Image (cartoon, rainbow, N blue to C red; front, side, top):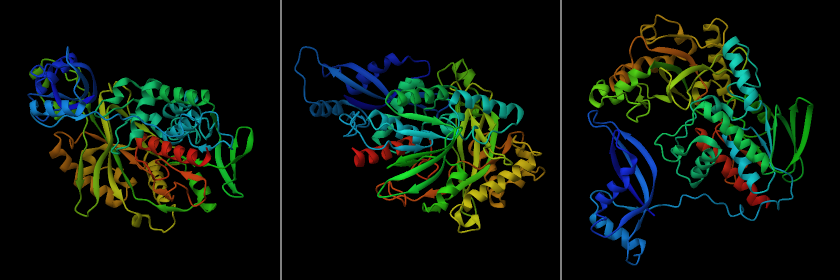
Length: 537
């Protein structure tokens, strides 16, 4: 198959005109060819000219030449590129994930089952690949299955009753289960295709494979993680909920005993391989691992507030104030998604200030996992149909800001500002809030749950963002605090073989400092699974 980029459709123009567009651009009629099969591999929006917004596609397609012998693909490329105006065509990459042990490993592994601590994206995909290849992994998840977790989180939002082991951060699917379910990633790795395909198989929607900024939404993601769990179990894996990793005992070679707290009491499991995929909020587990000699280091992260605007304001800024008049319909009816944004600014003191985890058509949520601390985040459903948009406003936190050389000092830094936000909220887990106008004039109290440099970055950066995106710094936009869990403040060190300072212990994902979102964490889990299988098959 061949791949072509920059195939453009007007708003409302049907996708089935794509073969016709390919034929025109490549001069297929002149060469006696026609498009035989095609599929969209990427869809994006070009809204630079608000009066002529277009949907832009990359497409894989095959050709047929009736009544003639087929030319080699390289010769077809040469002929078509001679006709095509613009960039060159290319052969479509296969994009297929493969692991050499995957076909012949099923059911043949006779060693100790790998143990995986954590059932977020990293742990989930490590377990999925191991189970597919017959390694019968055992997953320890401190939280509850998603069906029970939803009830606990809804009670927390409704009544303010926090379950420290079942909340927005802990439970099946990890923190991403209560989020926008964004699947954008900057990494280039064939394993990304494996991750997206598994999400599609589990009910995430076929458009995940081609959207410019794919997302599942929290409503869909909850079913997807349950379906992946069921597949892992069907392939021979075990998933143990309400089982928290509490200790390790190192024995001969890579052999170790894994200790876990469960509803039935303390459990012991022998293992040669242990995957540490605990997420960025398992602070007690980080402390336990550090006490047991697992080497860690401080890692920079970010802190700030969350900002909320009417989605209609963002749509107008990105698609044009007169969109309805120009196109005769609102953006969604024209096939456009609720508009998003991504903004960044370098502050006078050199710190980075940027938007993060932007949720179109979503809501600001309370996301605490620790008693006496308030945390905020954003969430949206698949349809992104809510009236408001929100995003984090984050400033860089450097390790020198921690005030200590302790590897866990960044956690203490986070806890300090989360406790301040809890106090500002009147001893409530609901995020304290005020308007942009109040914050910029210093008339509110929200700056009190931020380090001075972060408050200064927001006051400097908001007007800059307002000039980039009309209405962004409007005085009645709302700010919520504190956004402190954008990434882990700790990195568990690992070598080229992905081992921690103890052989056979594999730290991975966002919590261990090796990923920055759902997809990259899942890819890291697959890499760890491959390493375990290469050693244990």
